Image 1 (cartoon, rainbow, N blue to C red):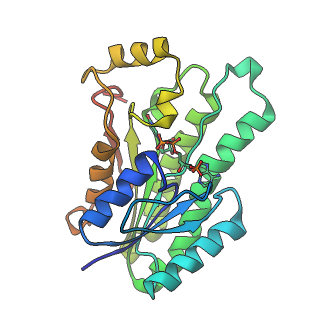
Image 2: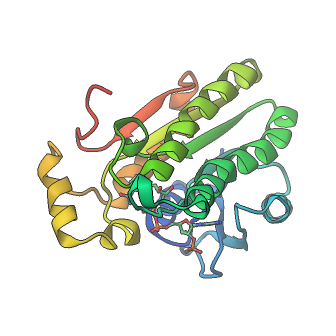
Image 3: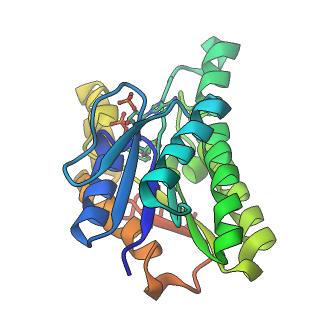
Length: 236
Ligand code: NDP
């Protein structure tokens, strides 16, 4: 059965690859875009800024109208970085990353569960990061936001597990997207040197894991953190 899937930040990077993976398996896919650029072919794009509750609500309403029913799979992927050392980090830099990465995922999960409870099932998937558990210099805001997703997913799993709703976390390592292309070359090299796989991943390598978590085969996986990091975070 094709699923009704909503992916935030599906216009580029990892979110776009996730959308392509669901389109490839015949699912009905809505991606949200903040900037207005479209998601991949076969997906429907709706506007959404995840820092704005009304915008999230409007995006879900548009998706539900498109599907003719509730969102069955939500992938909270939209995220930003604002890296700087702790001593220099402003309140605004801290707040904006938490508001987008953590509160944005909360707004989407909260909105999605209304339909999922009525539908007696659903899949909530958060895109976290290896940095959430490993930490990263200059990433106090980002790491806190990504670690927060783990507690959030596990709380949702405990609240809604008996309603056949699962909440899981995918924790990518170092993926070749705009986000990592923005890093200085020396920093990219230092990261690659520390990854057992000795390379960056392609966005599709994350997308396939998200696709699996939404499948029937993953029905008993709940509150899990699945690393997709080439071994970078092993042991945490
Ligand atoms: P990109 O920078 O390539 O894309 C980020 C996406 O998030 C864009 O679609 C962007 O929309 C969207 N977005 C940002 N802010 C908002 C907002 N306020 N409301 C709605 N959408 C927003 O990032 P990646 O594809 O690399 O990252 C995707 C996710 O994966 C993020 O959560 C990131 O933290 C995580 N991740 C990435 C890793 C990597 O190595 N790349 C590693 C680990 C985790 P727009 O185009 O409109 O700006």
